[in-house]
Length: 258
Image (tube, rainbow, N blue to C red; front, side):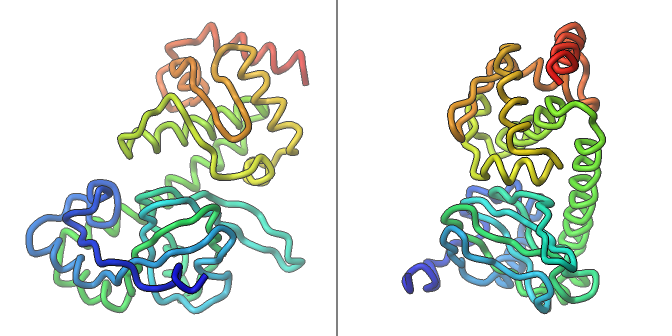
């Protein structure tokens, strides 16, 4: 176990394959070198290990290099609500900026590596590197957009639509990482997805079954094969409804089986 927590070999931002999607995205030259210098060496987590706990003092942001995480927030009774999932390139810990304490808990869903960025170092750099300041604003805007997308999904009455929006979001993330978008390996469990979408686990399974019946995808355990990307995109109100007839058929089928 100990070797997993040892400092890994240093990999600079320039040589990193996630350079175009994580914190240094769009930053070049001396500004990129400054970001590289303020980033600590990689940290590795095993499955189930926390990156930070809710209520801990905020000190760093983290860039997920590989693996996956689940973010939850607990109420006064200790009941956890899943509020998001991290994938490579995502920046974790932004919620700690509000009152200098992490408002969520981040747990590794599988073996994951992260770059730690002490915020004290970043704060000094933000005033000296305008491109980094602009990038940080984009990161914060992305957090707001993710929250909005979650609210949109939660507002859908049909469980099929909620699950389809969730899957579509994963497909889009894979596209940004230049990964094959027709196959998805889910790092999270059906229970995690159900918690995130405000559904029962059985409802998530039924929704995936209905999506299989319409020819949208195939599901086998935690592996999804996307068969009709246009139909999946049509479930997202923000995307052009190129398959309106199929969308109507899906909604009718969902209503009949509810």
